[in-house]
Length: 247
Image (tube, rainbow, N blue to C red; front, top):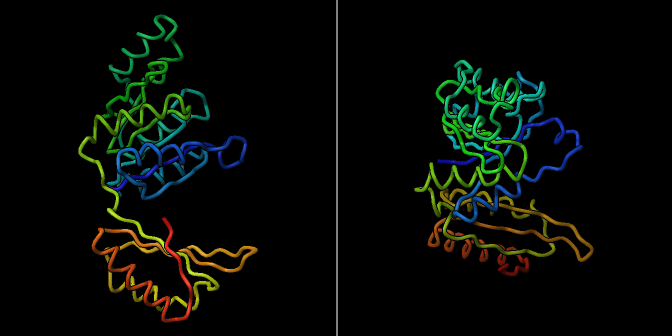
């Protein structure tokens, strides 16, 4: 199952707040031998959030969504998650129990609104203040606050998906070719992808003070990645370009 993350909030798109979820989510996944397929950042536009969630629900991916699950007027995620799934918002008994346990009578009349979740949801415990997130359709909706969201993401991975471990390709091999950019090697790149369709190939050009260089990488099983890289080194050399392995 592929993994994606969705980061919601106008403050990210406007630059008022710098996102930290993307880089930390990569760390959390890497600790479990997992990788990320995609990341989307969307603003606080309810129609667009609904459209995005309909697409990601249909993908079958495991998705972690950060932000917008509070009760203020600019928090749309709970309602949008319900609309995208064509279900109603309902007061979730387990969420009520968590919020009441934390705040007692002060849970009413406002904090308890965060217990209104899409029908069919299950809650994600929040170790910081017990206001839970929720899961629906392999989508896991978390607060925007890192100190809450990150341990909640780890809980979901370890509790819901313990079988998803060490899913990254077994090998990543990288060389840097010097004094060349992508165009002269384009036929070679296309040939590599045709020969080893299961291997993921990437090309990253760079122009610096010391000249042009091109980072070429392959990812896949150790056997296939090794064969693809050996062939690539040979082809780059035949074209007259110097290369070095990167470790």
